[in-house]
Amino acid sequence: MNKDLVRDFNEQINQEFYSAYLYLKISAYYMEKGLSGFASWFLAQAREEEGHGVKLLSYLVSSGRKAGFGEIAAPAIEFDSLEAPLQATLEHEIAVTARINNLYDFAFTYKDFQTADFLTWFVREQREELETASGLVQKMKLYGTDGQGLYQLDRELAQRK
Ligand SMILES: [Fe+2]
Image 1 (cartoon, protein in one colour):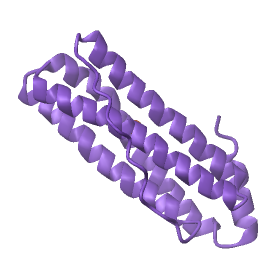
Image 2 (image 1 turned 90 degrees about the vertical axis):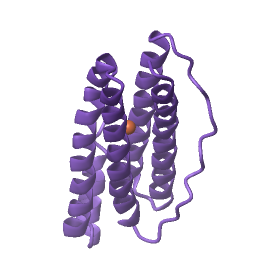
Image 3 (image 1 turned 135 degrees about the vertical axis):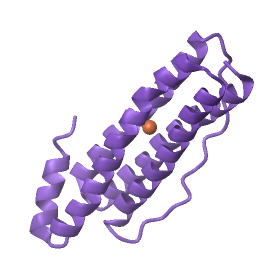
Image 4 (image 1 turned 180 degrees about the horizontal axis):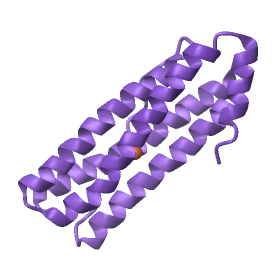
């Protein structure tokens, strides 16, 4: 694997753990607000992001490259409404998608087709993440505006394992 690609790969691993950290912060926010369904949904999302990080890490190490461990940034974001974390999630996933696309493109630049093939899973995953995130924003706008709707939505999100 090309050395610049290894650097960007390591950067992506760090970003996945940052995503997990961000979603933990969102989970804690909803916990504070008494929305346990939202909180558990974001906790599951954080675990999923850790899984992404581990998946990338395993590939890197199994390719005989060294994993670099940098600091994970603290999410510098505060939420001023129940909808704000969902909007932040959508924006974050848009940024992650751009990063994954760049990494994928970079793999082709270096004719590293095995890595490009491996990254296909992440390209597809991002499509799902974007759909889910924009779906949540939309649902919150439609139903989250009154107590009854919010209660139902919280129950729905609690179903995620
Ligand atoms: Fe991810």
